[in-house]
Image 1: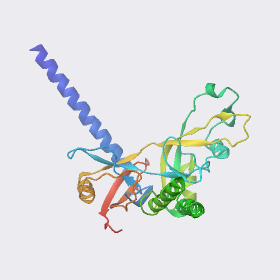
Image 2 (image 1 turned 180 degrees about the vertical axis):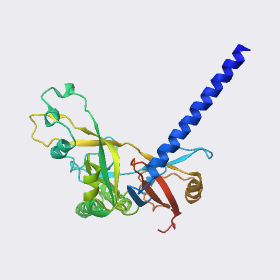
Image 3 (image 1 turned 30 degrees about the vertical axis):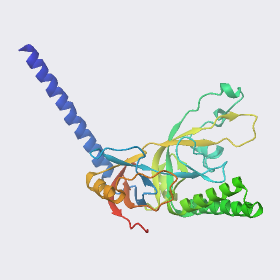
Image 4 (image 1 turned 180 degrees about the horizontal axis):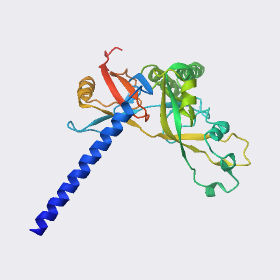
Length: 287
């Protein structure tokens, strides 16, 4: 009898914990979505991508947030995560974000450099605009160079392969690659929003930023990198999951495919800078 009552109490306790946890989650979601959204923006499959792993039919769905940078040390662009080093994330900006310039370099042997330390900052993501125009320009420039080389050395395998790759990259840039670019970062959202006031074009998100520790006797600028967004994906509610499933027919594309987007998503960010899906629209295959 004693065991029965103990088991019953444990069950009730577990049930109570579950209820309280659900209430806490609901309260957090409600608080995030109350009042004016910090951003409300229309994106497509180019920026909100299905995960590459296979999902069971009865499982939930989330869309990965695909963002990019115009790199400081590369003529192309990079997708965000781990090694995103935008040209604006220089020594001055790192100091503004609270990094001590004296700790951005070391005199130690390269094998004994101290581990990088990160900070949370607010990252500005811009949809389209000048960064995307620059990405298109870089792709077109690379294609023009490849065409020029192919004309100089007709039939040369490596030159022909380089041309085919440049053509593919340019095509992908125009119809498939993400148009969401990290363009700035800061610690004060009010200052950032004053500068980037269009809530349908700029998103403020929390992100991890860390320095690239270099040797102090090197003359190069002390840089930082964006390691990840605090929230990397957005949950798809059931009613929208059905629409996306119908549009994609379960086909998950590879990252390097040059195909147009199949769906459009209205995304909102709340007071806590957490996203949710407002609506989904299926796009025409020719769009």
